[in-house]
Length: 418
Image: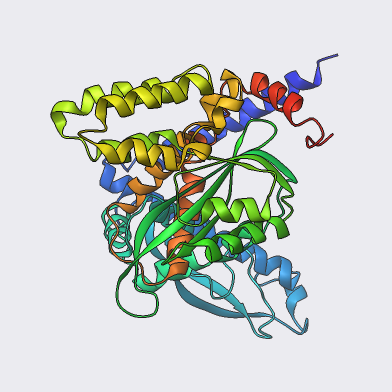
């Protein structure tokens, strides 16, 4: 007995041969790219006819009889001509005939009432928007590729549908425990409430118990401070976050105090890389390499005692020329040296905010060619779409996470979820 899968394969091959024969017949009189893909070409014609035939089939099913059949007489409803509708598609713009019934009860499914764009067209607009193209750039791009003219209002309407997803994402429930949280900000321009202003978009990136990166939310504000950060952390707690072990920040105003208020057991680690950068601002080029080397001896020490000794030596060497550097390190010493409490597997993850810096770099590339946004909602919408677009890059798991997780289990055993 012939196996079922062999019979199915032969059936597929027969269908394929029929399709190829049909395509050969269609292409017989269409040779050039313009005749196949151009305005009035084969592809557009086929798409138009396929849609119209499908709509006619839908009408047959709705009425229950074929055109001109005697069974339709006295049925209470019959065909009532056709209306014209212009559709936008990946193949460009074309006109189709939509059948009508006398009772007005026909609801086409392939091309719904008031639908002006075929499935797939909106996705093209959203993909271009997510890459940072402005409304006018999207208009020009679609006109160049498909010969389709669209209005700025159409782009706004297509992207407006994303706002519901943004709201749901920003309010989604979160895990109870995150071992590590990173916080950082990037600056954008907004016309919200009047003239153009610089606004900061604050991001909270978490490392979950599986070692995967998860962006918890986006918040926009003109001014940072303890009050603003308290509202952010209160929101995170309301969404389910009960604890975090370590938070890595770059010294944003009021942020450490707000963390310690809402999550009193969390340890705050200031970003070493940001601290080094801010320190080197005081140093001319001729001394920069030597100062950077001596700073590396501080944060690269094996133990806290060695780091304190390295800071002392640094002061003896450079305080006469650059006294502000060692004094600033001593002011923040307690929050700069949290990572010394941890083994090497965890130090590499927490002593810098590189995890969120790489994310911000990708977002800045999307924002760099954009002018001022009309409102804050537009900023959030674009960044959300860009995050979906670049997710494969910034969501890569942390290296050697298993070793770090074992250390967390030892150090925070009673706080680790079971």
